[in-house]
Length: 259
Image 1 (spheres, helix red, strand yellow):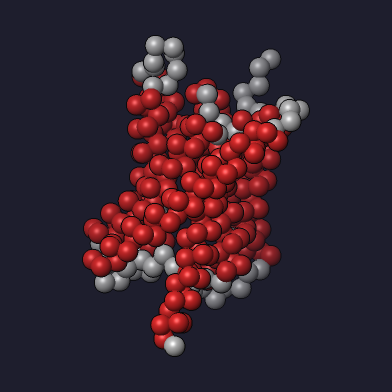
Image 2: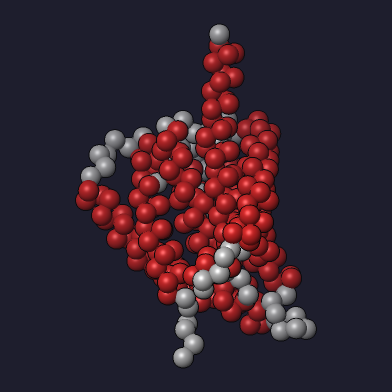
């Protein structure tokens, strides 16, 4: 009997997602200036809530991605007993490079936005470096599973059911449309956090969609062409640029300017 999904892969991704959702807690609390003490109870409740959420998301993501020819080819190959060292090396440099480029592009494009926003969102978030580093694992892994493995796969599958190409595969238009749509959701998904630091205006909403859209389209393309592993590596690399390197550089120049 053919398996609905690869259950080994399901449980590996589920455990990883629960871990990274716990790792992001210190970052989230500091970002909100929240002085709540991180207790075992908070950690347990967070883990349980995300266990349920990601169990659903991962199951549907694996189920749908399998039917549209996407997924996690490298990890899937490892679980099938294949040596995937060559495949991993082939995606490593391109994924890191695109992540760094996309992150840098976001920082540069944010500069003109700041001129039109009196209380602009500050990408150089004043969060302790080790907390920002741990949070990057959440962005790279959990967000990619949610937005690419699940959401992009869902959109592609829906369009695939409506229209196929001549070979019976998802159309290029359908894939691009799905990637862009998920990228827009990626931008909108950041607005609740943004609302905690500044009043939401039309320009701020556009800023969030444009900046996060750049990242989302980059990661979506990598998911399509090279697999979710590549999108994860790129997202993690971009987060390092945005949340660690950029604040450090900004702080360095600010201190030198003051001196």
